[in-house]
Amino acid sequence: MSAVLRVDLDRFAANLARVRGAVAPAELMLVVKDDAYGHGLDGIVRRAQREGVRWIGAFDVATGCRVREVLGDDVRIFSWIAASRAEAAQAVAAGLDLGVGDAELLEDVAAEARAAGAVTRVHLKIDTGLHRNGVRPEDWARFTARAAQLAGEGCLDVVGIWSHIAEASDEEDDAARALFDAAVTTAREAGLSPTMLHLSASAASFARPEFRYDLVRVGAFCYGIRSAGGPGEEHLGVRPIAALEAHVTAVDVDGASIDIGPLDGLPSTLAGRVTVGTPGGPRALKASGSGFRVARWPDAAPGALVRIYGPGDGGESSATDLAEAIGTIGEEIAVRVSPLVPRIYSGE
Image (cartoon, rainbow, N blue to C red):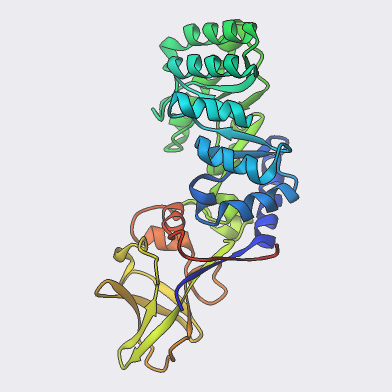
C-alpha cells in the first residue's frame, strides 16, 4: 500500500474559526495556492464555503477558474496576477477579482473587459519593497491616474489596493506599511475609491493588528502550518489538518522499510534528522537508496502504519518540524506531496 494524505476537514473548520476570530473585524481571504497547500483544492474550498468564507485567494488564474467551477458565484475569488493577455481574458470571463501590478496588464484587462462587455474588479498592487511584482512608488501616481481613467470608461472597477510584505523585521514591515498607506492616499487623490485594502498574510495578520486593513490573506495557518521559527501551534490556536501516512513493506534487524509510493518530493535530506510516528512511538527516519527506512524497529510487521508528519497524535513531527530540520518552511513540505498520493477526507 502506498502513502496517503489524511485531511481532517472538521479540524480545518476549527482553524478557520480561530483565524477569523483572531483577525476580526478584517475579513479572511483563504489562500489556496498549490492545490490548497497540497491538501486538495476541491475538498478544501467546498468546506470553506460551508463555513461561510467569502473570499478565496487563488494566486493564478487557472486555480481561480477552478474554484469558480466548484463553488459557483457565491464567493469572491482573487487571483494574484494574470500571466498573459489570454489569462486576463479568462479572468474576465470567470468574474475573478484580479491583482494588477503593471501598466501593460492594466491595459490588457481593460481591453478584455471592453471586448466582453464586462466590468472587471481589479486590485492595484504597489511594490512596498518585497519586489514580488507591483508598481514601483515612482510610477504609482501615473499608474493610478490611468486606472481612474479606465474606471471612468466603465470597464474596470478598482475595488482594492494591495501589496506583499517581507515579514523579515518589524522595521522593514513598518517601512512597507508607510509606503502602502501613501499609495492608498495617492490612489484616492487620483479619484479612486478602493474599499478592499490588504497587505498581510498569516504571521503579520496574527501578530500586528495595524496590518490587517479590510482583508487578510491567510493560507498556512488555516491548514495548521505554523511559521518556521515562529510561535507554536498551541500558542496560535491552530492544529495541522493533514497526516501523511505510509506503510511498512519489509522488516529486518536494523529496522523497517516504508513505501512512500509516488511521493517523489519528500526531501532526502530529512533522513537522519527527524522522527516519524509509529505504533511504538517516535522513531528515527533513515535513508535507504532511493527510499526511506524507520530505524530500530525490528519488531515491526509488514503493513504497519507510519506517520511521516501530522498533528502529533502518534508521536510524529509536524510539517514545520520537518522543515525546520532542513532549513525550509512547513509549506514547502506540504506542497511537495505528489498529487498522485490519494487525499482521504474526514468530516465531509
